[in-house]
Image 1: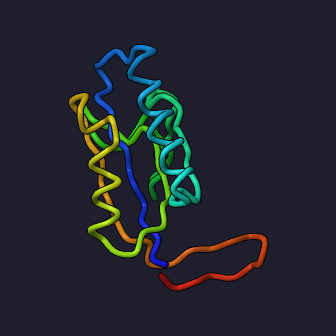
Image 2: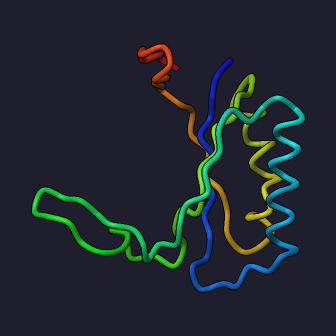
Length: 118
């Protein structure tokens, strides 16, 4: 089954209360219960980021943007429409941010030491 990366964007100037975070937890629980979620990662604050380029390392994210990637999820879905249906349910879409969906073109699993084409 195809896999899709869900990039969750967050407004770096917004406050996130406990109720909003609970919505994200519930969305993750729904994905797990449906057997769609294969991996998910919440990222630390953008201020902790380091950007590496050919000319060195700088503090912070490379992009100058109000919205930055706050987390990444990998889901399995039969097609892009199904992946988009899951993405539309992400609480970030209701709280002034959004998500980006991309099909995974290739993956690597260190347990079997092989790259797999999407």
